[in-house]
Figure (cartoon, helix red, strand yellow):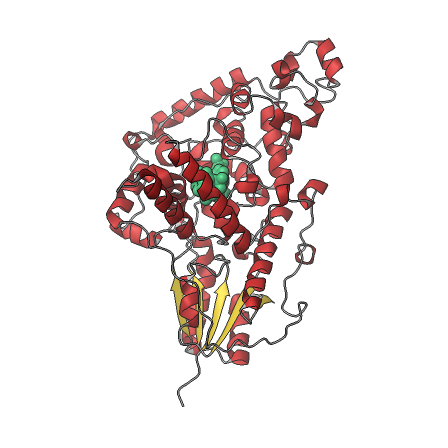
Length: 514
Ligand code: FAD
């Protein structure tokens, strides 16, 4: 009789049942099917995750497990190194096929290559499918003549040539597949707690997700419907989301970035939902790239990192400028703890640490302040903080944005953009001061006039507000005017040195987004 087909689908990112082409391959003509997730100490960014991101991942796994149980099976959680775990499973379950979603970043290649080699040795069929990104990054690189496009504008030109990304694939069909449940008890191969994984909350607020925000495919799809409804209304008014002039700074409850990061939402599903909504509302044949521009930024940063294992470093990273950043630990800690004395910067850093999410305008402001704007501190130090605390922290997206904001790579390299003023920018983004008052409660009674620069408040006003600067809240750690002047002149000198270097992106392709 023909050999039984016993499939394992190995989840890492892509924590969903919808639009999961590798899962479909797993089920094709399968006699038996197992879904596994392996905790190996670093899978899906777990090596650096603080409590909010680890909790989010575990919620995604619980939701996936619940979805699989409805279909008659479950998620098997295993601890160990994949190259040791798989031979055991091959033997125990008589496996003949392994499937997984492509993890495009270079940090995962070693792990995946080991498993591919193992499959060869064991004569197990191994199928890898692209669905974490809209396009296979390798196909973009190929279309660009063998190297990734150096600028966002060039990237968009290449995607125009490659054509629209594939539409989402159908829901998996488990009919006719034997779904053995080795042990139905939760504690055997079940989902661990954060504490069991050695990750503990650092504050009360970290324990309580903002606005009931939770991980998992079910919630991601609900959020997507809300988001598309909002987009549709904006399109009807001729606008385009996100609105960065009047941002919702506490907008985590509607953000989809953590879901895209773990793949509890398919990026293709998101892309095509926006695309189709625009087409329907506008009745236009052509959908402008700007409508899905944010998702293209994600693609761009992924694509740039694919062949560059040093992408998250300055040294040894061919696209990153070598800059003599300061390594001032004392100043770095003031920034990281939200004790800079600039209320807007401090509110952003405190929200990041307490809730695991901050709005794009906040990320931009604090990253600029740390690097080329005020403190001239190494972007890699800031990246480490983001990489630990952000629920959506992505190896390539986070590093790419840090290089971007610090003017270390991409179109930014030959520009000397203006530094963000932490007082004026804060006032513009938070005109009523609600955000600053919420995260910097020391200043909750400070009049709006002084809220963003409280050191200017006369002594009696500080006293009345119950906040004496230098006692209840720190004075500004640097004078922004002087500090930004110093940074600008340093940057100018560096840029003059780099003009004409071959690996530097041409400034003519400059794209203004941030
Ligand atoms: P929307 O504006 O609704 O955008 C939709 C999606 O597009 C996002 O969910 C995200 O996947 C993608 N996207 C949007 N902006 C960007 C961008 N600039 N670069 C790449 N992708 C983008 N985003 C992450 O997902 N992970 C990170 O680790 C991350 N680190 C960042 C670090 C810095 C210093 C900065 C300035 C930005 C960073 N961003 C990161 C980008 C951006 O701030 C977030 O994606 C966005 O705030 C998420 O909110 P949203 O889901 O409402 O985004």
